Length: 282
Ligand SMILES: [Zn+2]
Image (tube, rainbow, N blue to C red; front, top):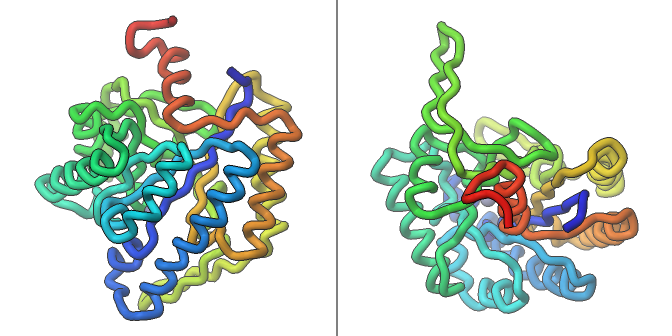
């Protein structure tokens, strides 16, 4: 057990992210399909360096790219839930959210033979019901929220956030939140996206972004006794040549500086012990 944990995570949205935005013409679909090329490059890199990782895969991707998802599974990486379609639960009715969760679980069980233990919401938002639904289905962690950076914490249910009165905090649950951040995500910095009401400029220099990513680990390593940093990548984004070089450099430098690479499931289990969840220590 290392003191400075690093979770390398991939959201294998492939075509589902474009479908969820209603962009189903040939070129957006082909941008999603580039995830196949990116995934194979990433699996080769992780395999060469012996780095474990966690892949959040929508059911749509599992059913549209079954052999690619089998390659991820066969390489020994953790596979976790990322919706069935790539629609945020915050946008779904209660019934739709249940159907999405269950359909995504069924796809993962067919792929891996076991129920997923981890969830990451598409587009990083949860409905007021999500935490309860995850607990009911035996999930041990979520990785979609941002109330801490290096410390996993207990997700709450039942927060009340009226616009005209102070917020009322709900009850803490046993669901471990392994927090994320847009600043540790490849999508906003790299992906160029043009939609009717939005232009995401992206296309930042990979070496500038790499410096930020490394400094966030350096802060953890030099200022904190224990913690986890969670990087989020998308194979269709990080899979481009210059970004793959940055990812390679990131993994090399983290390893040299003493990072302990773990899956999100492993870090969630360790965090549960630290937070005295699930019967204490062993
Ligand atoms: Zn996603």
